Image 1 (cartoon, rainbow, N blue to C red):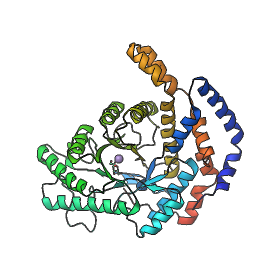
Image 2: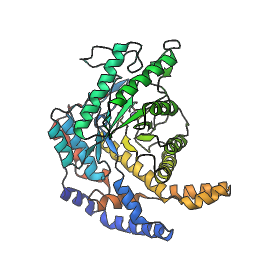
Image 3: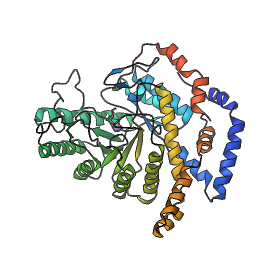
Image 4: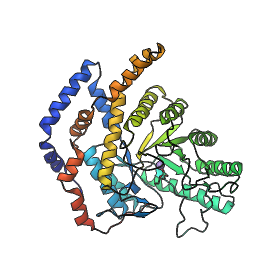
Length: 426
Ligand code: PSV
Ligand code: MN
């Protein structure tokens, strides 16, 4: 199913007047502060976040999965769903595929469909954390780090195939996340596992097309609870350096131990030109994959401060590849993603308001109170009219969740796909 311009226009009509008032009020305040509102709007318009193909169905936990009616059961339907989100939010202009969950049957059809929704293919993701029916070797004891050469070779070949698939779609990067590790002390030799991983990654790296990047994602634990081979940003960073200039670290917000200072990690990586990709989600305890901004919106804003600073000052760091990596078991997945996109744009917009010059002066003067005042002044500004203006002017919805509900999108999807359709993925 698709939404057309007229439907979105109609959904906006009852909000236009209030929106204009709110936007004009905010705009005046920001201009009085010396901010360039047009430039901020332009930056918000170009900030596009990829939607992962596996987040469009209900997420599961290890205790069960409660399907959501009208889930997309084929890749084409998943692309349509991202198209719907993009139409309303104007922020989801890309889709990220996980292979082998979403191998295209017909590349031309899939490419044309994505184009018709104004979507591009972002990073492709390999999967060596599950065995496939056709696999000869098992990843039970690891993939790229495995003691057994035949398993490593199978995992390397899979990653190369993922690159080839992505290349046919126009993707420009691969994300490698490994579940490799150990559940018990003594199970693995740390040094051997790391060495195998490095050598395997180098082989995958050698297969990258000229204009491609490889993102190495880290995670401290789960599914292994004693040790994970690529456990932290430092390990990812050293592996990326060992591979070469096209290899980068990928930061997933849920992949840190509680209270880790993620903004500092972002700053360090960007200063070294090695932050390649970013996965957004939110969490209370671990890799909870909750809606972005639902638990720690202030932390997200501080992370965006580091990102905005890095994007301005670290020109040797490539523009990062943004993706939502969240999916859980309660909300309508499309509403969940719309809420995440809003939270991301909100944190970004607030970070764009930060008075960098004043902050630098306050920092030099060791005016600790002043620093906090400056940072929190940006954080406490209600920027939602800016986001609504960006969407409205781009042809999107002033209030995306409201439009989604008014236009009865989920009911229409259920009518079209049925109540029992199930999305592939975790
Ligand atoms: C692992 O937890 C991860 O963050 C990786 O990015 C995977 O590809 C994705 O989640 C799968 O859900
Ligand atoms: Mn991730």
